[in-house]
Structures are given as structure tokens and as C-alpha cells.
Image (cartoon, rainbow, N blue to C red):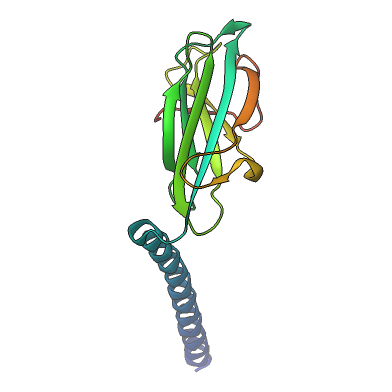
Length: 166
């Protein structure tokens, strides 16, 4: 008899917890679906405003120009980053990338640098640099350029990672 009461009590409790968990999962799924719908509507309907950004700089490796270094300019998103431009450094290690995106909120641009300076692994070292908001321009063509200066790829940088798929 004691076991029957306990089973009934815990059975009801478990069902209540299960229902609460299902409700929380549904709420989380609804929020994710809403965020994806808004992002899709922006892309498909062109809702938002056109914003642009440009970044330039010079890359060196142990004092010498870092030639043919892969660079990508992204707009950071919640799910997947959106590539706005890509390129490589020239024979002097210099580069300039520019891109634009239509977005309701202010874009969140970042520059990724993929290199093998002082690194012999199969993959690449990746340095990510966030571009400040005051270098974001309205319209398709940037009016300002964020200059990262001269960056020595031989140094270790905060947040530097290894990237095999770039």
C-alpha cells in the first residue's frame, strides 16, 4: 500500500515535470524559429538598411611582408556568419577588403586572418578582429576604412585559434 501511494505520487510528479519540460522546449523552439524567420525575412524581403564597412592593414611574419595571406570579412550572425568579402595580401603584405549587408540592426563586422607564420601544422592559425561600430557606413560604399596597422603574425594574439576549414 505504501508503494502504491509513492508510485502514484511520483508518477504524477514525473508527469508534471515532463509537461513543464515539454512547455519549456516548445518555448525555446518558438524563439529560435522566430529569430530564423526574422533573419530570413530580412534576407528575402530586403528589410533593413544597407550598411558597409572597409578594413585595411599590413601583415608581416618575422619582419618580412606576409604575402598571399587569406583574409575574409564577415558579418557576425547568431547562427552562421555571412561573408562580405575575401582576398589576399599583396607582395608587400598589404590588403584592403570592403563589403556591405542589409540588416535591421547595426552590422557586426569582423576580419578573419588565416596564416601559417611560424606554424607547420596541417591547418591554419586564425586571428579574428572585430571592427568597431564607428567604422560602419550607411549605404553600399564605405566612407571610412578601419586600418589595423601592421600586424606581426609571429606574435600570439588573444582569441587566436586553429582553423582547418576556411
